Length: 578
Image 1 (cartoon, rainbow, N blue to C red):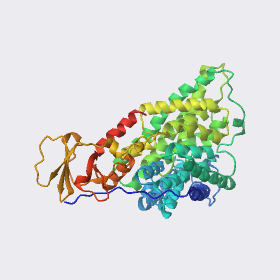
Image 2 (tube, rainbow, N blue to C red; image 1 turned 120 degrees about the vertical axis):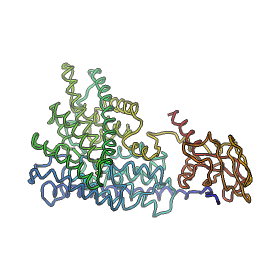
Image 3 (cartoon, one colour; image 1 turned 180 degrees about the vertical axis):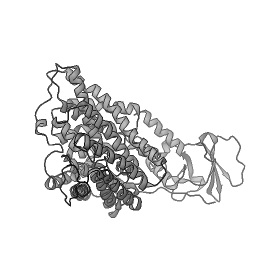
Image 4 (tube, one colour; image 1 turned 45 degrees about the vertical axis):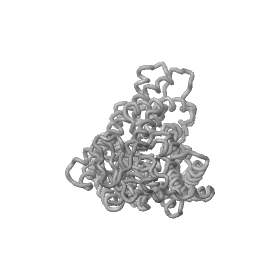
């Protein structure tokens, strides 16, 4: 049998920096216009389904008026669910869920290739999810929309996969910046979660896209921060009593555990719905009718829907001091966690940023009430605890610590609470990571067997060559030779100078793996390890032969053997150093 030998391949050369920057600006234009258009579509869906009005204007920071449909509002999320299931199921399955894991998967495992149709399907599906009341956010969709456009540009114009990934990160950061009017937050988000390398080149492209998208968004949507509360711009938090600062440590602990509940709740609910008999339509409809019932009960008992959609109106109530009942705060926290888990677990399309903000705001304010009761002599401000809780919740659930600090400061225009934010964010992130390594973004990839590192790390694997870690212990035998039992060597079986079979010693095999294989790739000593891993994945091979002449390999050219298990061992050694 002929071997599936795959010689090393070279990537496209990097684009001219200025051309790449121009493409970044173009991507930023689409992200900025897309963020505005996405809001308009959400507004139209929301107004039609909730109020029976054909109108695009919708201010998510204001509570929706009681629907004229009365109790029938329970079925509005079900209508949205059926439309979402049809769009996602028929046109783009990757548009299901909160989107960012799919972007990360494309970056790390698919050379930055995202299908162009994903942007359109994601926009429509998420608009119907959010507009019909699903407890999800609009940032995940705009990230996927911006990244899909960046990837499409990178596929239409010949460029290296690294440049294409840079455009994906630029589109994602630009989408975040345009959605929240947070340009610094957009840049930092791209750096923390999506860029595979940080340099003047990549930062220039991301910055060009982010600035462009923010400017367009400000022209189309307005220059006000996401949570425009003038009182927050005053220096509320003071350090006259330094002991106040210590209260944000237990807040970080609490939000860290809430982040664990948030992550496990979403994926646990997803597992539950997958076991329910039926199909995507029936399961999603079941989840959303539960959300509809919760919305209607809240409306009848409190006067507002509270948990529906992005939930910004509820967050505004907390920050403005309108929503101060600690029992109601805790109830809304629990209900939002449940509604988000039901929405995403059953198949909605939307982001997790906004639900995390809601959980952090209500949890932080509730903790602030506890502190005020325990320490009546301290001058405490509930808004400060809510803002710190929001940043800690973002950092704990997504793993983006700097993004949480910077973005929340931009969204509230409150620069006086930076120290509490840093404390709460660092503690919450440490607690979540201590309980579970996976973030809400990486957990889905881990379930697929795809490893994505969290946080900025040195490219340890990329700094090592195949020749540095290959095994020298192999032998070449002619076809028909008897392979000795218990051999500790890798045996290459050759015929007419070509390797036709490979026998691996039992000690190097994974459970269930056959000792004999004919599927291998051929590489050279100076191939870096990420390239080798990608080539193995593409060829569905578990072994690579290191050859002096990988373009026309023969058995006599082989100088070493590199197995997937050996590569995984090197990766595990790297993780222990983190």
